[in-house]
Length: 188
Image (cartoon, rainbow, N blue to C red; front, side):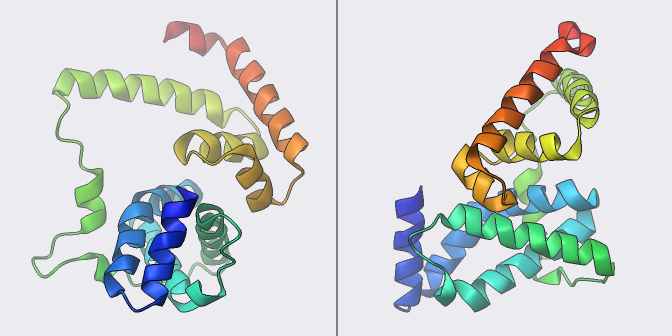
């Protein structure tokens, strides 16, 4: 995906305004869910997401195209979320609403395909796995979240959290070992 991101960025830098919209569409869900990991609040995460894309827009010329755009945007998201938590400031998120008052983040996350019984089953499994993961240390939770929810590879995670590659791999392995020991896993 790195090459396609670079192509989109280059088109944007050459004046194609629609290219930036493509970047937003490609990353809005991931940025929002990563911000939500820090805030556990929908409106705060929406505000952080908007702030991230404003920062990306303002700084895209500074992006080092030799690096991963995904890692760069996740680093911006992490820093923005941490700054928000520190300052607890209000962020405006109205730009996510279109002219009809529809919020594109909510529209993207609506899962209307599942039947009620499927939703309950999915909720039970999600709660069980979430409960197991919450029992892990934050450094392990972060690696799992980035690897499985955002499909970052170990090298990208290493760059993002500023830890050696082997440390990230080792934490991931230890994390999986701990989860396998958990009796809740046998219920799934």
